[in-house]
Image (cartoon, rainbow, N blue to C red; front, side, top):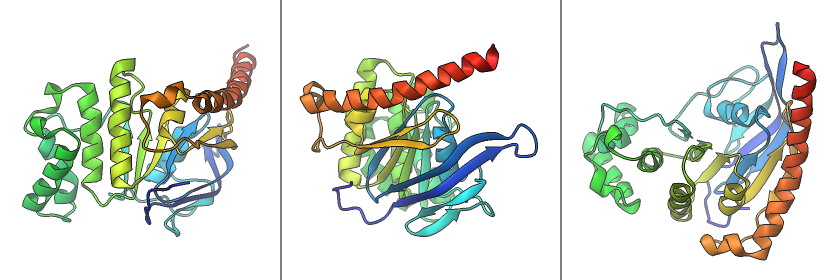
Length: 278
């Protein structure tokens, strides 16, 4: 559960099923998924490749609809079988490969959303963006173009761009997957700082179990396809967290619990693949 005092950003996923190509291949991606995410929680989703993690994130973000069930944000239904969610500034996605505009500077990328949506004047947006960039240690690159900064810096700029909006939930789809261990460690520290400071709900997908436990308030394990919620594990490690957490006995216990749950599903996925391609 969240302990940071946030009052917006609660997500309710109720009996959600998603079938791709219902009239043809009939691929059952999600099957009767239900999950309650309190406002301000850092919720991490893990599971085998193809288990529906990104499908669920995309439904929350408004990239596709669902076949049955309901997804609500702060008690208001945003996605049903009759109507897919509308993408909005309250739900920002940070992808693994990034989505920044290379022809804009860092500052221009960060202010783009609220200015285009008419929610801030350019001057107001620049002031808000300057404050956020300063808090994230990025003020020195505000006038740099995207191809002039590192991949780690780009992920931080994407988070800054999200935070300058009227954000309720930050959706992160394996944002650090391609990074080396040292860069990933630095990015974890920055993200935890943002989380502790901003009190925003985070929905974070990863295959990295150590990352899941280190960052998350809860770790949600999904089954192999069709994706269902297999197990929800509370990460009862106090915040704020630092690297010393990784050496604690409780961290090792939680890692083993998550590993056992995920390995069982990975084995099922592998065996299904063996049969499918035999």
